[in-house]
Image 1: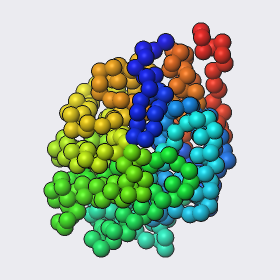
Image 2 (image 1 turned 180 degrees about the vertical axis):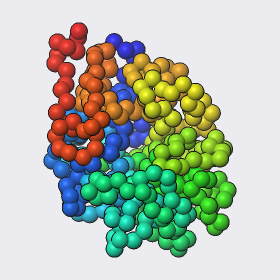
Image 3 (image 1 turned 90 degrees about the horizontal axis):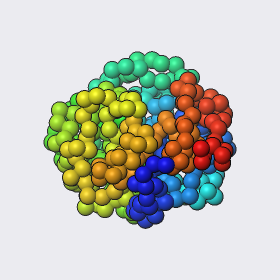
Image 4 (image 1 turned 90 degrees about the vertical axis):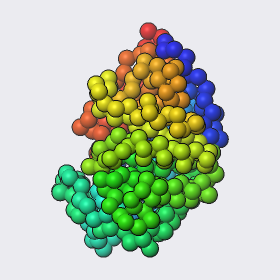
Length: 369
């Protein structure tokens, strides 16, 4: 069995977790279309991965139609979506699990085919990302040059997040996590590569982090600080983002977040493999001292490395993605040192039950050897 650190209780905001194995937000592209409504199959998927006192963070869910950038991703801006999510929160709560919703706006990495009236995607600045985007039919096309948001439109973006938070509350969630990572709208404002504004939302780190702080304040007003988290990726380059001084930027962001007393910060390390990339910068080494609260780490961890990170005080919990896809009972497998099911990347995004709800769980005899 793995050392007790990964399976020690943890106080996370308002909640008392029984272990520190967190299910990371995972885009699976299986919502019902049209409408982007969570399905009964989705309720089965989340229920399979729920455990007593375990935290699940849902797949990112767009707070407005304009925030969508991938096909068949669920939203949290309609009555039908709220009802679909309510089935999922009920299923997780029946297993005594804790579930937070990740709130999302993709910004410039959307496509006109997703946008109301075929408008251009929005961004802090009119800078196209390198690479390709999805269309609703799962085709890949070059990213378009987005339209820079007018300063008078930014309150509407904040209100969309606020309304998404209210809807998540109505859907029975236990809290919300702001998606401030992976090259989406919030991070586009944060990073110097994507934010060339000259107004109050651009230039200095204070200005570039303004939207993040204003959205976080709105979420806290809806939920209370002890039921709000945020996900950050300080060294992330996904979706063609980057910052000239990530440590300077994120030390400022964490220092500004600290007085809010939110439930947690969820930080993605720059790793792409289970073992971690040799030489990849580890944000936690430079940034942990700026965040006094609960810290969830993510990025290529396996059981022993997750336990070691908690034992060393680098983080308080660890989020698992790919291994949670393939192992519905991942906390139990890690606790008993059981073998993990291999994951199948071909079934990560889109489709039905295959690669979604058909991965096997341990039998009792397997769990004990």
